[in-house]
Length: 271
Image (cartoon, rainbow, N blue to C red; front, top):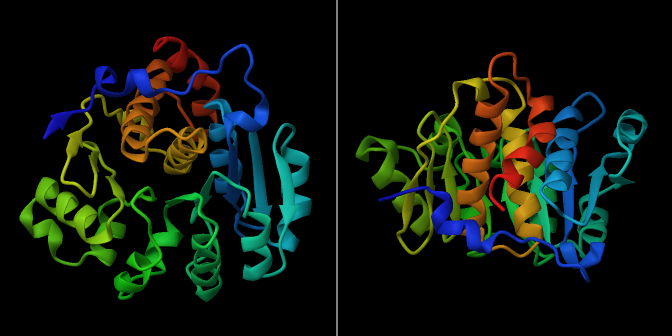
């Protein structure tokens, strides 16, 4: 197992050149939940924008549009009335974050099925994982090798029951192999695993991340990097480290909203 260190992935970070335009910097879609569950998508979308994605768009159920619109400026917003419409709207995306506050219901399952056909990198978090409890084979059938799952231990156990008895390193390595996707097993000692057996341990975990919404920000950071076509394993590794570094830079009093405002400082330190 490697220690996750900037030396491993710093050279892969997608810095723009003088000739770069916004569409070349990647198109990120974040899927929102219903009207009373929109904060997670806004957190993820802003983080993706801060990480350099050139165009970020929130796709939302129609009832959520009026809630989200007053709270965003540089982020685009499009309502979708059905899973089929969601798939069409997301078809040009380079990366898609789905799951945060999505709702643990069949609508979320249908949405993920539709998004799997877009060819974009999927970053699946939270409800997007929990809704497949007892249906892991179905989820795996939707994944490509560049897709990323970001469970905490409870969500991991729902998808891969019993694997954690082997220990976290063995469990996440086996799960990534089974899923044929990158897995970020979140916790005070976050692990990042690739389908080929590589596992990294993140050494700079921050206690200040124990706050609601911090995982949504992490999903957005990963989405922002993968939208810019950074390799999924390297992007997940970088995102986990940068997420913790930003939290440590802010320190006491951190709330999830603060993280995106600290990301420019964390990124500047990596130039």
